[in-house]
Every structure is written in structure tokens, then in C-alpha cells.
Length: 238
Image (tube, rainbow, N blue to C red):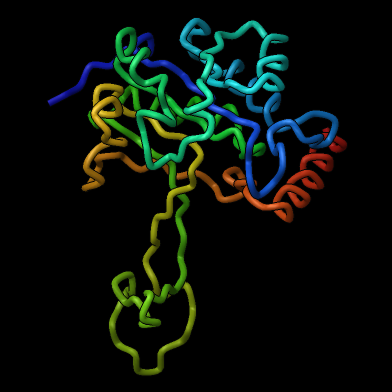
């Protein structure tokens, strides 16, 4: 069977807040000659999507003041939403109730990955439009060895189970896919009901491969510092 999809049925969300705990005011802290928030706004506005479907979901005055400099819709988040945990979907993503009345799907983008390319984001969206799957998520392809919580080596991804003359080389393992937390796209109706992207069985959601360099995620101060140096170098060389 095939699922007919229309890009006009998708709302495109950039959801941010100021009260990050590991890096104080991470989204508006100086990053090169800009900040992560404005990098993300410019990126989402550069996509090949209907501009009327793009929303910046924010509630902090500092973010609102910045967003108003751009020609973009603002969804005003409540204090409850800003301070909620992602474990509570309907609080953290309170926009899902309102948007489910106008749209069928939601697109979410991480604002803390400054090297994620516009071209990659457009490919992600087009892959979903042309897919029969109802949700999609970005992943990194990793070839490595993993131990479980009991410190037992996981051999499920081994190309062969023969440990004789075993060389600890990544050529002998199949890839494992890890969430890159770059982008997600799924049904608003499921989100409203507390389901995030589906059953997480095969192709629900579909997996979309992103290079690790593009999906470098800034969570800790050392990551912020490293990313800023790289960002400055990219700007200087362009």
C-alpha cells in the first residue's frame, strides 16, 4: 500500500528554551559572532517548505525578542511547558494539541546541532514525503563493540561468532544505529495521544542516516567550546 503525503500537511517546529542546566543560556550564549538560536532560525527558514507552516515554539522573553527580528510564526509556550520534562509529551510539546487541528504531521529539529546542513534537512523531509512509512528519525551508523550493563560483550552485531584468532577490529562487526537526535517527523495524532513516532518496531519510525560530524550535539561546556572553534574556522574559510 502507499501513503499519500502533502508537504502542506506538515508543521515545522523549532522548539527552544533558555533554562538549560548544563550550559547556562546555551541557545543565546555568544557562539562565534552569533548564537545557536539564530543559526537554527536561519536554517529552518532556508528549507524548501511552506514558510507559513514554520513555527518557533518559545516562551522566554530573550528568545521572543530575537525571533521577532525574523519573518516567522511564533508559538508562545507556557511556563509549564518551558520547565517540563520531555517525559511528559503533552506538557513539553504543548503545541501538538493546537497544531493537530491544522496539520497531520510534525517536523522537529534540534537547535543544538549547528553543523546540520540545510541540504540534509531537505533530503530528510523529501525522504519522508516519498516514503510509505508514517514516521522517520535520524540516526548515526556506528561500527564498534558494546558491553551491556553487566559488562558482557554484546556479540549480536558480530559478522561471525568465531572467537578463535579474534582481532579486535571494527571490520568484524555490522553497523549499529544510534539516535542522532537531529530531526524527527511523525503523526500529530499519535503525539497527542502520548505516542512518540510509533511502535519503534522495524520502519516505525523509518531510519535516516546522518553523518556524525553534522549531528554533533552540544550538551556540555566542552562540546560548546569545541563546536565554536570549528564554527569559527568554517566561517573564516568561507
